[in-house]
Image (cartoon, rainbow, N blue to C red; front, side, top):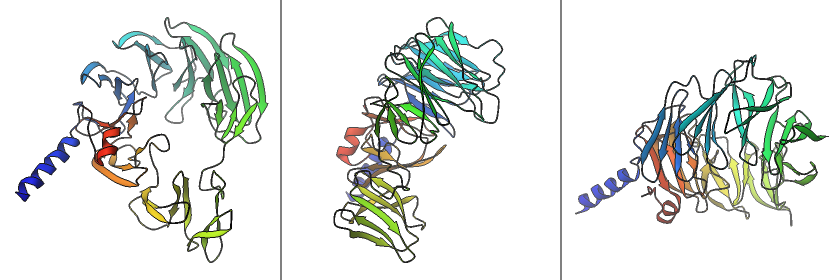
Length: 386
């Protein structure tokens, strides 16, 4: 009876790790949710579109030179795949019908593009980008999605030595950063609305919930580039925790974490120890010892409450998190709140969450594994979607 029970449990474990979409994966292959229902699977030369509810392959595109970016428009009507040299293929969704290939006349570049979309979903913004040291288009190009007509181009002198970062936001606005400059542009007219100088250079910008988020963790308004807030630094370089309750310091004798309210030392280790990162549960310590890429986590009272990987994918937006498999490798799954490992597979590429956060997709060597996030957390094991 005991042997039968063991065999039964092993069978359940195998079934839990059996991919629902029969598409074998490998190194440098990716999955991307275009919506809660549509999932793209791609490598440098091929793209497949799946319906995750019906488990049906909708389309298979081959012949790409080397894909750099792929993204669906905000309204879900278009898919854009950028390729070399300086081209973007546009498809209608969900039928994956090819509409056109956009390629500017004489771009004088052999790179590719990042894809961004205007807030009304009617145009795409193409920013020159590349995998390696090649020339990229110096213009940011605004293109009508329905027709492929170039609406206008922005002469930013964009190149590897003068790289721009852009983000789009509400009200048909585009933000652009370059070094210490932050600019605001009107996508309806192509006019620059405002420019400010940042106290520190920003290596990237993105659209956040409250405005334009810079790499220095400052948030600026989409209306006038006014400073909305300065977010606390939650990196290991910041001696203060984001909520200001804890701080760390080091000396020749000790590394310590102190509770600021009463200056009580809640953690003390040798001077070789370092803070790995501040977490919503407390903090993580890097002891500089071999630990299979996982390090101890302590709560706000300095009590060890478990371990987590050094790089936590999905944190802080998702309760089911994983370690970082890089271009492909073993993947371990954790319940973040309980600090509990709930599963592991021998090979997968970086996991992706559906827009509603209910499904976690992972490309394995056997196919795409779709996990039910809520059920996996509730049962403490990997549970596939039905």
